[in-house]
Amino acid sequence: MGSEFHASYLDVPPGGGGLKSWIFSTDHKRIAILYLISILAFFFVGAAIGILMRLELIAPGKTLFEPSTYNALFTLHGVIMIFLFVIPGMPAILGNFFLPIMIGAKDVAFPRLNLLSWWIYMAGALLAVASLFTGGGPPDTGWTFYVPYSLRTGTNVTLAVFAAFVLGFSSILTGLNFITTVHRLRAPGMTFFRMPLFVWAHYATAWIQILATPILAITLVLVMAERLFGIGLFDPAKGGDPLLFQHLFWIYSHPAVYIMILPPMGYISEIIPTFAKKRIYGYKAIALSSLAIAFVGYLVWGHHMFTSGMSDTSRWIFSLLTFLVAIPSGVKVFNWVATLYKGSIELEPPLVYVLAFIFLFSIGGLTGLMQGALATDIHLHDTYFVVGHFHYIIFGGAVFAFMAALLYWFPKMTGRMYSKRAVWVALAHQFVGFNMLYFSMLILGMMGMPRRYYDYLPRFQTLHVVATVGSWILVAGLVVLAAALLRALRRGERAPANPWGGVSLEWTIPSPPPEENFSLPPEVGEPYDFSKGPAR
Ligand code: CU1
Image 1 (cartoon, rainbow, N blue to C red):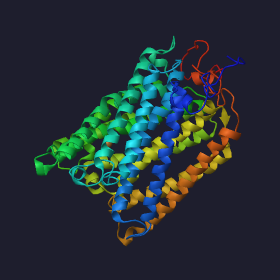
Image 2: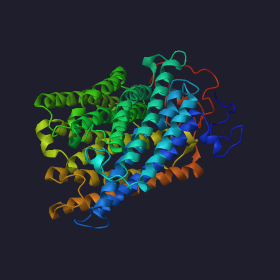
Image 3: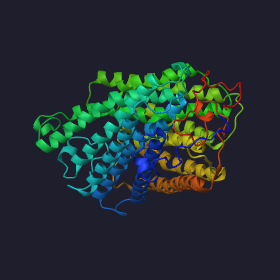
Image 4: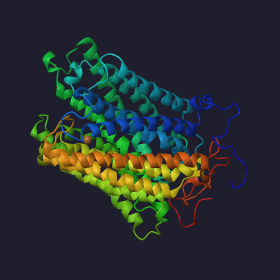
């Protein structure tokens, strides 16, 4: 394609520029940017709330807020981070931008439905914000909306639950779009086993989005019905079954963990080969392990309920299945490390973020096994250990991989290069701050500090202080990274089409990509083939 002139997707379109050319655009790349901006805005709100929680916990007793305010803060932090950031963000941002390009398509299968998905996301987000200022004020139930408390609290649970219900449709429609795109729009020669692992990861995720999200939707409708009309479905005082709610909630919410982590695993599988200049080790095993995780992930939800009073038989079966799902995750980690082995490694920012990911995600995975074992779970249940564990998975795993991916594809998306020095400063702060914050939580949990508590015994204070100071260092790292990328947008050097020497299709087109991506049908060869040098 070389030197021909192509209008970039960022150029002012024929109909004129401005906000309208974005919020009514059906270009998958513009929609990805819409998601990027709106979702990252919520991420920083969620992070700010996290900082406030840590400030309150720097000393026992009241520091800044009333207990009821603290309850609202941890609920908001969870609802924002889960429903407005990590569940929609992992598929919708980079999936939208790169899935069509990587299979050689001009767009997703249903571009207008794609735009509608963003609008539905925004509607759900506005409803969630509205729930803070209406009815009885911000919900105080925790992001899980556990009954019977969520049925009885006077706070505005009904609207918050409705917001999550609406957000679910956005997720379902994105999944539908991706599955259809993968089945119908692959370029000639792009067989399933030639697809980049990024695409496999999003494909597996899309099935979870379609099949699991409706269960959450119907569960939330039942909570609304019970709150509005007093039907006794879940409230034991009315003959309802609170455990039924937990089952229905986790049948969605465990698979949802894989909506958060499978796409990031796809990013990792793209970044490692490019910076090791080596074919990925065990391509088929990684591709199929995504599907295996998506499938087995449906069968393990009971591990959230080991202390809820299930039968012993169901407990050991759920425990066994939980250990089984570690196998496909382990397959991926071993294959990534095997790809690095004897590679010609370039320690560029995306790869170093990936190495941080592997370290943090492994701690997340191994602490997960400790809770998957029945005996230890009884000790650890509802303690800070759980909070530490899932932040290692979701933040140390998904978000670090997301930052790696953003650094990898930023030159492609924007046509600019960022300052690598600023990135090293950011990563050093993030890594140190992260481990101070969340490793302290693992220890606090083993010592018996319960989660979601406003107050604590003096013997827990040292570790709480370490965690709080860690939260400042971590957020400083996030701010430095954000500032470096924002600065690069205006002042960064022009990025070439293929700055890292990648071999997948997005590196064959200009940076930033033109509208409709390809001017000629792309040539499709074997994936991860570095023998011919970088893609041109
Ligand atoms: Cu789970």
